[in-house]
Length: 168
Image (cartoon, rainbow, N blue to C red; front, side, top):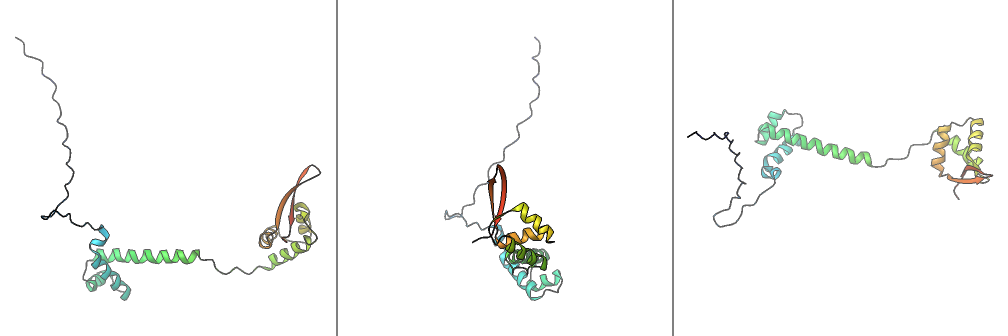
């Protein structure tokens, strides 16, 4: 009788890792788990305090003062730098005093007040008059925004016209 054909060798299945079991104390109470950043908070707090008191010392010297290792001092220095950046960003977002208007913008504001004193006018007319009066177009736009000029669109004789008017 003939020998049966050999089956190809099967690779064994990879073993699945068992999920870690939670450690339970003898009395059946599960231990309190703290976040990793608060577990060893004492050395880092000492390092922060030592860095604040001795900013000119080397990191190794600060580690000796704080009775910790150098890597803890490096982490503490990074935290201090991060807090300083947050404070700087907060200060940058605070609105400061308005800049004083330049002479060009003051001229443009006076021009706009005079041009629009008797009611709304078409933008094209105002811009032509501003060019003749040697008022810079950029300053004119800044003055328009500063004065709060009202922009409206109307249909004048079948043509769309944009008008500017001073607020009441």
